[in-house]
Length: 398
Image (cartoon, rainbow, N blue to C red; front, side, top):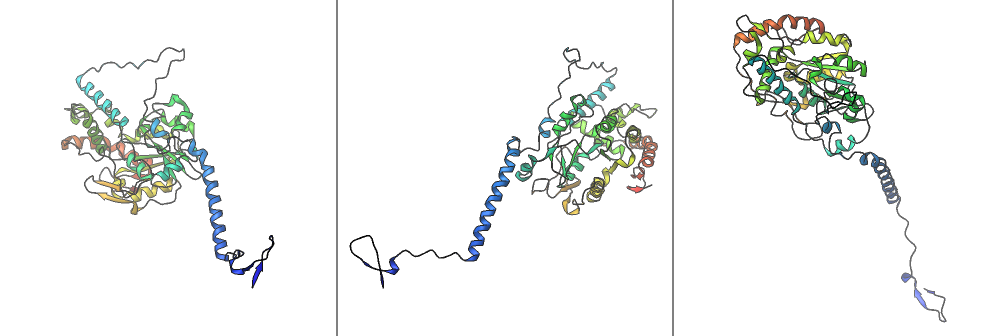
C-alpha cells in the first residue's frame, strides 16, 4: 500500500519503503561504550587542565629540577656589610716545596669535586612529575665521606620511587651557608606527599660548622655516613688528585712529616678525613647516634642490596631496591644498576669511578694501618659496628 503526500493538488501513491524510517535505537552495549568514552574524555580534559599550571611553571621540565643547574654555578662572593667590594681570602705562600705539593693536591681535589659528572637525564614521565609537588628542605642528608661510596649510594637510592634527590653536590652547609635556607630549598627537586627529599655532600662530615648548621635547620634530619677503610680511602683520594695533577709529589712524601721517624702528617686532608672518630665527636654534640646511619663502603660493593636494605629501613621506606636491581661489572670491579632512575638501560658510574690505584710501598701501608688502628677501634665503639678494617669480621656488631 502506498501513502498519500499532501501539499499538492494531486495525491501520489508512494511506496512506504522509499519514505524515511525512524532511527533504530542503539543496542545497550553500544550505549554503555559511548557513555564510557565520553566520561574518559571528560576525565582526561580535567587532568590536563589541572596539570597545565604546574607544567607552565617549570620551563626546565626535562631537567631534574632547578637544583641540578644551580648547584653547578659558582657561588658569588658576599659583599661586606658596609657595601665594600668583596675580597678574596688571603693565603700565604707555602713555606716548603712539599707544602706546595700538598696545597696543589688539595686544589686538584677541589676541582675534581666541582667537575663531577652529572647524572643521567630522567625519562619524560619522571620529568613531567618533577614539575608537580613542592620543594622541601631535605629530611635526610648523606654527609660523608669523600671517596667512601657516596655517589654510588645516592644513585642506587634514586631508583626508589619515594626518594627525590639533588644530583649535584649543593655544598650549602660548608661553602654557601650565607645564601640562606630559601636559596638552599630552591635547589631541591619537587616532591609529592610521602616522598623524601635528599642531598649528598661528603665534605660536610669534616666541616666543623656543619653539625650545628644542620641542627639549626632541623634537629630531626637523618644523617647517612658512608665509611671505608681509611688507608684505602686515602690512596683513592690521592689517585683522584693524581688524575688531575700528574706532577704532584708521591703518596709517600705527602703521607709523612718525617719519613725516617715515620711521623704521619695529619694536616694532609687525605689522611685527616680517615680519622672518623675525631669527626664523629663533633656530630654527636648535636645529633644522637640513633639519628645517624653508617654504611660500609666495602659492603656497598660486595652486597649492595643488603646495605640498601639497611638504608631503606633507616629512612622509613618500603624495601623496594633489592638484588634484582644490580649486576656486578667485572671490568669496573663494582656493582651497576640494571635500570637507572628514569631509564630502561643498565647504568654504571662514570669513568671517574674505579680508577686503578698506584703501587704504594708495603711498609708505608703498614705504617698507615698502625696509625689508624686506635682511631678505628674508637670508631667501632662509638657506632657499635666493627667494619673489619683491622682484620676482624667486617660488618659485625660489637
